Picture 1 (cartoon, rainbow, N blue to C red):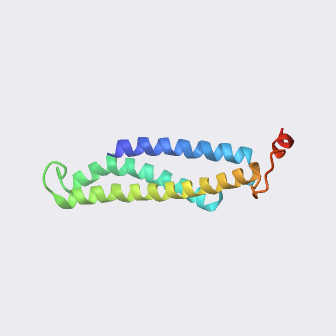
Picture 2 (tube, helix red, strand yellow):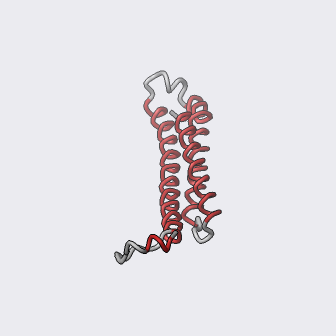
Picture 3 (tube, rainbow, N blue to C red):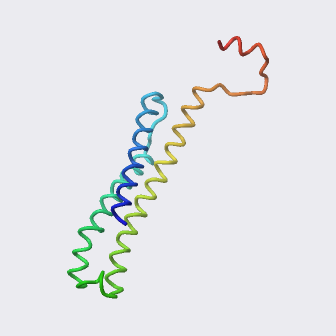
Length: 130
């Protein structure tokens, strides 16, 4: 589970980063802001935490509860899975913040590029645009 979460999370971070880069380059007024930076760090902490709890955390839990994964030792399994869940929640909150920041950046970029439509369009207006 943690391997797939890291791979998909890393792929999503590449998409977010690319959009931040393109929008920030083309439209300087579209700033990332504090929420976008917080989202980035929550995603980073979440992905690193998923790796640490999924891999190294297994060995720590196994030292406390020997063979907790193979025997029905609920306390060990629940602690290990809860640690992974907290890391996934951290990533998910960060991804939501990044998504909301990207939405704001896209609105700024689209507003500057497209003129507002006020309903007074006439057929001759197309000739002025060309």
